[in-house]
Amino acid sequence: MLFLFFAFLLNFFSSAQETNEFWKTKDYRYWTEKECETMLVDSPWAKNVLYNSNGYVVQLFSALPIRRALARQKQIASNYEKLSQEKRQELDKEAEEFLSTRFPNAIVVHIISGHHLGRSVLGRPDSLPCPYWQNQTTETLKDTVSLIPSKGRRIPLERFVISQPNVCEFQFIFPRHSQGRPVLSQEDKFLRLEFTGPPAWSIGSNRLNQNPERMLFEFKLSDMKINGDPAY
Image: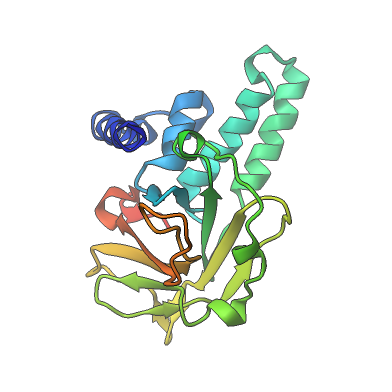
């Protein structure tokens, strides 16, 4: 039953994306809370996958649409429309400063690992402490985490960042250029993220599978275009 519920949610979000690409026609300052959640969970720049009982949300944080959704979420949480003009201007300035950040040399991928299925596909998951990721470093992950353009080249991890000890959220940072040229070219059709996660519980038993979980997320570049170019 739980799996069917998850499949229904994925289908719902997918259908909404196909019929209502609000990011193409609507200023981010007018996005609804539901639209922000859709952008952050199931959009051209965000994917969610269930591996056994653990949900993963993967966001291309360096892509402007993702950060627009985060900025708008903060406005909504602050009851932006009900604030005084002065307070709104303060939030506007803060949002513009946040959105003005550029990533000329990096592709930043934000991962949220949720242990609660219902929340892992609805906005921000309940993210519990995760010893596996807390114990990882750039060095331990460099051979198991990579970006893969459609040509099949593997772009190695440049840096791993996990800043909060009690929340299972972290970032993979990759170079935007490799061997003197951009990671993505006009010939590429998609961008994949591949990484190894912690061993999973074996289905139908109460023991830990010793084999690490291999995960693959794919982003279609033709759906990620802003002003004619893929945003990533």
